[in-house]
Image 1 (cartoon, rainbow, N blue to C red):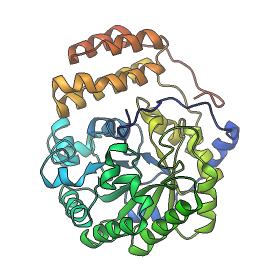
Image 2 (cartoon, rainbow, N blue to C red):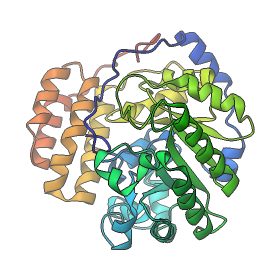
Image 3 (cartoon, helix red, strand yellow):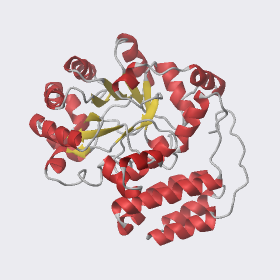
Image 4 (tube, one colour):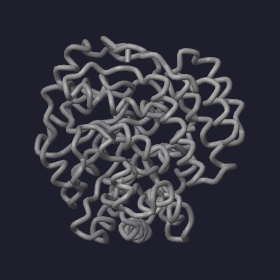
Length: 389
């Protein structure tokens, strides 16, 4: 499940991609738009980990950080839940998570690679005043950016006009954006996550443009645009040509792209084809934090490679430890299952490892499977060439 919607965690076929050599050349020569790190210090590469409902918790983010993700976004946190003191207060507090998973002091955690910054707290809700109140709670928790979700396609939130359902009601969407921007201190950037429209009708395309333009006029730093419609959910292909057209018609605005990013090569293909300023990595980084390492290798002119077994073992053990610290032993054992089946894809005995992870219940089960399949020192698996990674 992703965003409450049953979705494939594998690409449905593949849209045409540029040859590896072109993506590698784009990566070597790419310079991030200086407005991005000027707005969010530390956001130093043209890619980041998206907010993924049910996935992008503190454990996943800390693993992504260790592998080169320069910026992360939380899963969507409901405004009323934040206001009522529920999920988001402890389990999504970036500094508290780092403290519990690390050495206690913020400075020590930074040295240990457990710094969950820069980070955006993503908020989703219905009423402008409640969205503004929730955004302020996230500011007080130490988030560097406040991100408003106008993209989530879950059916159950339609009655409340949350997430992507706002794109069918542009004036209400603008009211929410105004309330959040007015409430959040001016030194804290606000951003917005959108889908390219509610559906493919001309009316909804106009609605998107109205909300998109209003966001920048209100003072939002950028929009992350997923190139599927809300009704499309996660089916079919993302329509990248919409991003290309949007960037061409709004050349002065920072626009970030999302949709069908499965490899490091895809990141630079989207940058090249669409002209977006950064790329949101979503399903493609589940159980695959090495997508960020590979992207940085490409930018450095290096040949990206598959993770060796000892690197997979290290990432899995750390992910398990962080999940157990944040969620407790019982919940962590269940939560790790959806990550394990994706981590298994990197193992030479993928199906056997996947089946073993599926059977895990307790954290001891997890550690035993990791010891069984990842315990021996691995021989180098070799560099990855072409478009195979």
